[in-house]
Length: 149
Image 1 (cartoon, rainbow, N blue to C red):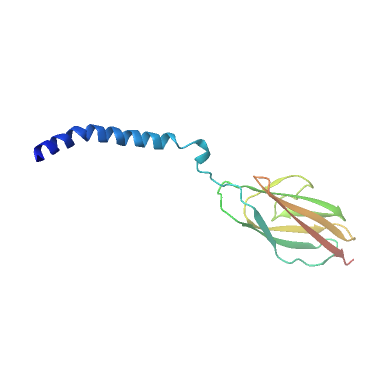
Image 2 (cartoon, one colour; image 1 turned 180 degrees about the vertical axis):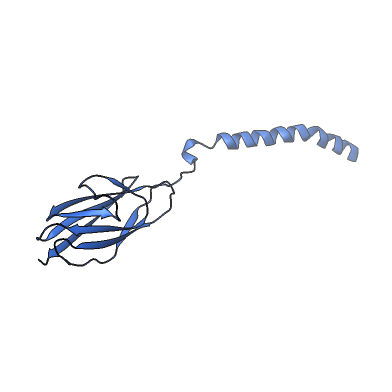
């Protein structure tokens, strides 16, 4: 009886292998493109700005310290800066780099940096700074200085 059972079981072995291969192929085919793993690379961010003085005199330079705070980390994200001055006149620059031109886009090499604004007028001054990333997220900061001349 045992010999008959062993012969019967051995005869079914190819059937078990075929059944396992069929199950595996059905499982692989049932994965569609809708089930693909999505990798998120677009993360919103915030910009922290240290306090700046309210008053400025003609020729005075004010340091503006900024830090970009990511909500996620995607290593290929690039950050950019542009600014527009709508009251008074002044010069905005990154460290000792050449001054920024209004509305031009500049890549930021670091997420923590300092800008330097130098007043070139004797009236109150206002300008906006926009920080954007390579995915279109953007933050706007407004700076206003009262003239003390």
